[in-house]
Amino acid sequence: MRRPARRHLRRVAFPRPGESEFRQCLPRVLLLPLPPHHRTVLLLKAHRGSTRRVAAVLGVSQRTVQRWVTKKPGARRPPGPLQVKAIEEAVLARWQPRVRARLRAQAEAEGFVFHTRARFGFVAPAGSSDDPRVRWITQPLPGEVARELFAGGLLTVR
Image (tube, rainbow, N blue to C red):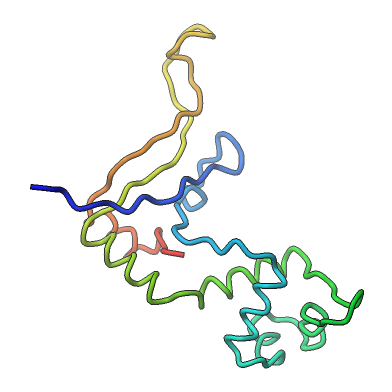
């Protein structure tokens, strides 16, 4: 009997070697590879072109959103790092909800393959193959684990 295909999640690297924060190593299935300006335009489309609504969602003034999306040459200002993060979170929360729901249901039903990296090894002289180093771990996980991670809020399909 053929096994069902498992969804491979994108590899996620730690920000720094040795970082042990579990939430930072969880995979992000769907990434939106767009610059902040285009993400802001997507937010505007989601809110029917209302810069006031987008400003309320992002916690900035309406004029600031207008500066980010203006078409006048030389007048557009890029958002700051905090605003870029807020824009990304707002877009990902509204981006392809049915696709994310389908992927979550599929992961809960069939399981998924988890890719991450970790630093481990054994006490050994430097240069031996047992010396601690960063190694990639690829582990197929069953659907029960996905359900527990989703229920606990530790895993999100983005």
